[in-house]
Image (tube, rainbow, N blue to C red; front, side):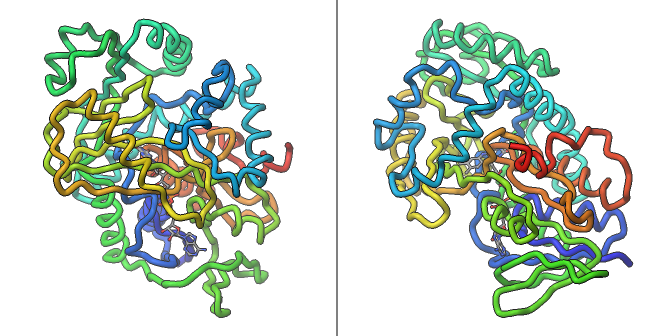
Length: 414
Ligand SMILES: Cc1cc2nc3c(=O)[nH]c(=O)nc-3n(C[C@H](O)[C@H](O)[C@H](O)COP(=O)(O)OP(=O)(O)OC[C@H]3O[C@@H](n4cnc5c(N)ncnc54)[C@H](O)[C@@H]3O)c2cc1C
């Protein structure tokens, strides 16, 4: 039986393990802490199929500067980390070039447009299809200006197959009676879905692959090694875990490991924050995106989760939960009388590339070394699809999706 070693057991590594097992592969998973907290546990739980607009600072004028001036604004950079961000932000500045922008949007849509189908199929195999709620999502606007400004993005999305419709304010009140009556415009994305609890999906996947025979090894991966006929991961302390293929899916920590192969990737931890309110779970019927304020609220089964923010502070700086508190304070304006008893604050490291695209595919140096990381804001959405694509590569089958845009080789082209 062919044997795959997967380094990193967040949603991407676990979904890939499940896909490999479905194809008859023996799987060994390596993680520094299988039960530990990670981006995949505390995220907003949205299957955000419409999000194909690349991250870019183009057309924003002085807005990003204004955000940076506010210590608890939606975008922040820790001063100590600013210098090392230069290559990442230089690459981000190239995204806005029209040919790049359209190409990246197409590549995101190619994943997102099949992501709900793949995600649903995965939950079906896990036996937890009831955890998925296909109730759409609403983007709401407080001003006509903000709605008008967003029209370019909606057109961009429509051109890439996203289906949405404008909702009248009367309908908004019926759909979401818990919202304060302050919104002038709303857009419904019917294909969007959300889940009961991202941690429950991760835990179910972990039990599922364990029950199907996966081996679990706890350890800190130091490097990816090719030993001729075998490839694998060298752990701190010198243990070598080898197989016929190795997959690097260590989220925001992945660039360090790909470097040991000689593959450079521009990857940053884009930290996000939220607060979960266990006593407000039924306050909304579906995920709501507060467009101007750049935060979302998702009615998970475990509570209403309110979060967002993009903080660039590296991988080791302590969390600043003032950000969770700021988002919650904002939410009070739009969701009056929130019960904040037993509120839980959380921070997670989004693994974010400057071109908004994940890295999925084989190393150009060695086709037995595979990568699946850098999913940024969309790791949950794209997990099952990423796993299917990795599965195709294991089967030596040509994936339906053109894999070129996701190759790690793009970072070497400049
Ligand atoms: C606030 C917030 C909200 C979000 N909302 C959404 C959403 O609504 N929808 C969506 O699609 N996405 C969302 N995301 C993004 C999503 O959570 C991430 O893209 C996704 O979880 C990344 O998964 P991963 O498996 O790549 O990484 P992780 O979940 O970070 O897992 C990486 C794993 O690798 C292990 N690891 C790392 N380095 C090593 C090493 N050297 N040796 C051994 N093990 C190692 C870690 O222990 C960890 O288990 C959100 C993220 C945040 C922060």
